[in-house]
Image 1: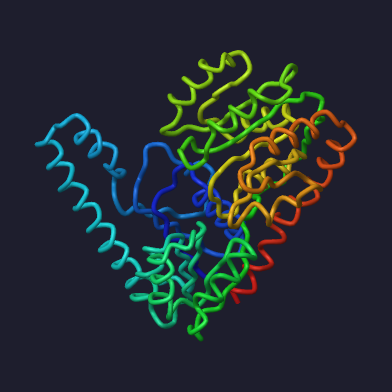
Image 2: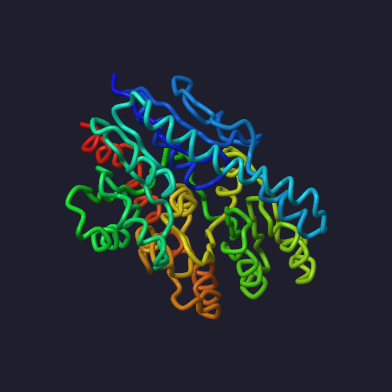
Length: 374
């Protein structure tokens, strides 16, 4: 049985981690899987992994960025110096431990999930190891990032692109690289649910990290302006913006209608998916958002702002949801109202959503993996 190693920063609650867990579980029937994880976080998704998957933690603990910033904010200079040295120590250990693992790894395949690990894999990976890099974020035309791809991927065997747009971009960036093959590898839905929303409740839902870039405040403001007499908005997720969003809900006098539910597990999320009729997203940038795929698998049409990549590979505008260009809030509100007030269209969109989600099932995505893992 061939062995595959996945290099991960942590196993926390993010899209990269969820996607990797889905992939690892799906491949574990035919391959020996090892997850090489740098940070050992207190809250993680380890329980979602199949029991035959090995986990190797490189560092016992998590990053200290929050502690360092808190010292700066509160002007605790001695603590700031202490946390600064700790941060430097973590960075050095991260690099050295990952290099050591790559050099001594006995896996036939190594899959890197982040550019900093991919660069090390490119430099230190053995010649007989199949080196696979995954890019989970959009490059956003960042010149530094693009330069890193051009200069440090010449020994990477496969570069996996989440979307058709990104695949074309990588082919352009690596046009002088005759070694690396660019593969379209969308995120995988681990299990398609057996239940579907009945669309009876005209509720809205959003599942996201509550970070600034996700713009959940805009979802709440949009909800305040749509026809919400018989609706609730469920916001599932945790993050830095939680308290600010709570204040906004109070300010808009929506405490009885907008429910900030924090982190919930998969079973609890399903309950709210089934109680909703439309999924809302307002992110500024996305790779290939798993949450859209998961929402569609429950038959939820999705409405999102246009991003450089990701949303257009999932949402077929006017068929299973809407993509709003130029972050036009008025148009967003109009599409929401049109959809929830037209039962026939809502049902058609719902059926199309479920159909689209099946294209991202483990059966379909494994076909791509098996072509690489010859």
